[in-house]
Amino acid sequence: MRVGNPFGASAIPPGPRRRSSSPALREELSELERLLDEAAQAAKSIPHRRRNLELVHSLGRKLVAVHGEWADEVERDLGQAR
Image (tube, rainbow, N blue to C red):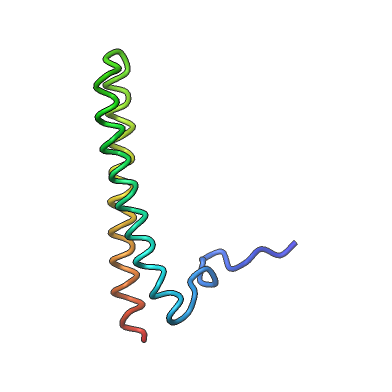
């Protein structure tokens, strides 16, 4: 069985499709941030789990942030390739 390019190059669509996927990613990241905000509020009502939930939410926020940084890098690098 042959697996696609292990470096993911084939996963990046060319041209306009690639450019239009960036706003969708940004929108999804914003939605994830909103959901993390809601989860943080809900955690306040579960005092015995609050610290554990805060740690999980912290990880979630860091993952969202690193995805945003990666999207910036992709836009910079691939935007120049046009």
